[in-house]
Image 1 (cartoon, helix red, strand yellow):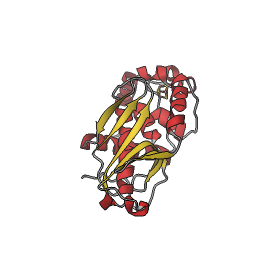
Image 2: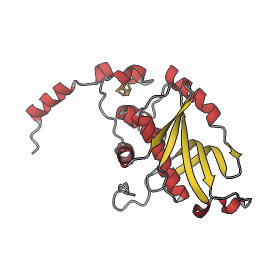
Image 3: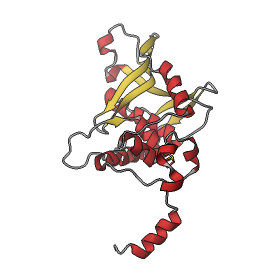
Image 4: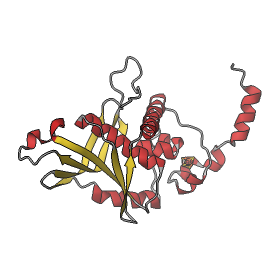
Length: 231
Ligand code: SF4
């Protein structure tokens, strides 16, 4: 499996940021920076429903069957990627039933690890949700020492799961978003607003004021054409 280099030369471990920032970054890099660089956050109906919904999934616990354990609100992290967070559900299937709890989670005893992320709303595919789930899988791969080929998003309104395959393309998108997020945090950069359809659902709309703070791309290109003298 290909791994994309994340650490810049000479750094042992980057400061960890929360997994949810990947979702926010792919929704809008400026939103991610306003939250994680500037520390600005406001709720709206969408974020409030999302938080309420996650309150239930965030209660730690587990359910057990002979060869499977379902772990709720499992803390996860990746040293390689500089990430930390929680998985709503992780389904761990074991190769054989065992009463020896300590050795149960050794890589040779685990058959599969399957993350499930809960999302409010109907069954719909969003790249930012898939990348957040993929980032969870990358953390779990590091923690469990085995490849995780797929997981699922549970859509609350339609009460249906959507299976997500962790393809090379999705892994690349996810690791690129992680790298870009690290750069924003390290450089304390907040990108320029781009006024787009998603802005109408963004809880930071009144803080960001994209209608005023965004610059039309045509104007940016025209400005660069006239003033950019770099080769
Ligand atoms: S209002 Fe639009 S540009 Fe501003 S942070 Fe939200 S999504 Fe991004």
